[in-house]
Length: 331
Image 1: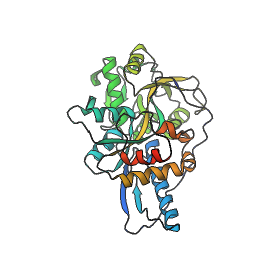
Image 2: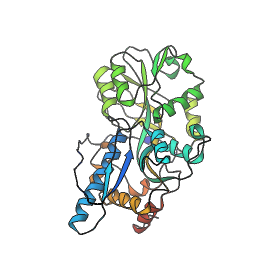
Image 3: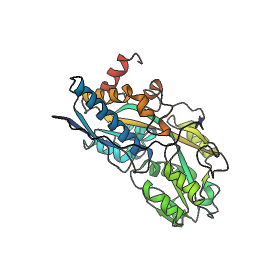
Image 4: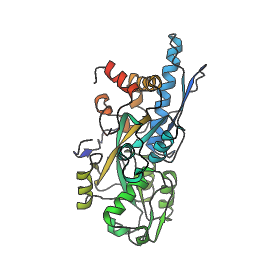
């Protein structure tokens, strides 16, 4: 992923809700996609992929093709959980931050001693900045203000927990510096922030996001900039990070100032142990219906196939994905 500033476009449309179609397939392969919290974009990514897979299955039956894949995308603990479950063979696909894809396949950071050499990239989706959000009246304006506060560091296995731990290490911060460190999930933390049970939360998520909107517009929370020399060095030293800007008022009417932070890419991953045919059909379903896919969340609006097959991908591409991309002349 390039180290250029990511400008989150203000022209992204409002969230389009959808429901997963029901389809019955005889002798179908069943795949499970690991996502994230039910209020996050990862959950939408996984279920959008399933929607395209089921759409292709229905159309294929009409045309006499027998693609026969059934798909489920349950809520999970997030990036590292998904990668771990793919490694164990419990999931066939998952959504994961680009940094944790990198660390898993290289056996670094939290994956040291547990390298996942068979991890395979399929495609990337949207940029997602890490957002540090402080509650109304918390007095938190910078990272240093977190000292002595109740801070949600995220649930174990989640991408935001991993990123929060990276930031804590770089800033020389330990959990003992906080009044309390909670481990709430992404779906729990905004409610706790608005109720005054925590003073700050971290969330790695695409923009816009309904839960973040609830915090900013619903209960007066605000973004905390992450643009110090520490973050600048972090971005410069790691190819999977890039700076991000969330313009004031572009997505959240109560946001008065631009938010400057850094982020990763949301990526779709699998394992070399998953058959080429299944990966090919999943990839085909997404890219043959990309116009429909783009409409399922504002973060998907500007998806570009040539960027999706390269940006934020550090694990080798799955052979099934490569087959489709070569057929399209993208490789």
